[in-house]
Length: 451
Image (cartoon, rainbow, N blue to C red):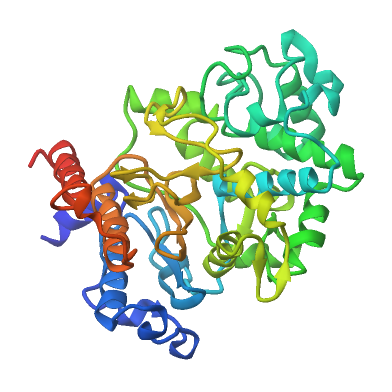
């Protein structure tokens, strides 16, 4: 049996999970509010945490940190597993460093939400306009007929240049901002600006960072530090980290079953490089020194939850105002109806920089039409839901695209949606408000398990 377990773990790149998770769980009870203070029961909070534990038990994630806030109260701020030393490919005698709520994690594409809000801050100050062509700020971007592509179109994934062609440049170009901007400016559009919704994995973020630099005279790392990181007292929460902090950042792991055609091709088309290569790059110290506005924000689960709590509060947190209420509301206006994304080939709904929820079932759970957030490399989820008055951050170190863990993840989102009650009477919508969610759960199990 042990040999079979070992073979399974190697083939599907999973970790061994102990029966008792208490020994690998870290949190400060004094830092978590009483459930009743957030209009929940202890059973509600325990059910949500059990969902996080079940996610760890899939073996896909060597480390998980999770923060849930409701009505501004921290209900859960915990971590399970290890930030390094216990993932696929690690040696048995490698030092196993515990994952804690203070462990910084690379946010991957969840970085885009922060980058987008910095653009909205410049709009608030009258320094740029979303309707302006990008070429107004970056003249060389006008090459190959891109002169009319606007800031708004790019930030809402309608810019027409979702990604460089695979193999068009070496991956080291990510560490050279000027070279990468030149590459993006020389891209030929695959569609006219505004015509086609297709997720821009790295191109849009780089351009937004360059706009910040050219308008303010400071790089976007400095701009973020001065306008959000320092005012809110965040320890990390910036693009990359200081040299001394590099060893503290959680290691990322390529987990789950290997990708096969056609999924592998779709992933590479979206990312420009193979899935596993993205993981390797993100563990490179150069990645953590660089400024990559679309992909290398580093933060803790609590910091990401606090950022979305600030947006939930219309731009204010703990007495510190970062954005005007109108700025936040403008950032949440849908840019399009829900439709199939041309890059990811799944139904998506975007605003100018954020991923929006939907009903009866959306990215952020059941009846989440007012929820907003962003996903990071498919395995990091950060969002807020005004109807449920929650801000949440799920940080994971395992990077898996297809697998049975998706069922468990869907169940966690459903549990959060069900336990964090909105107080809204859903009976007018359908007799059982979560029937659609359970239907999706059944479909996922049948597809992934053949059940």
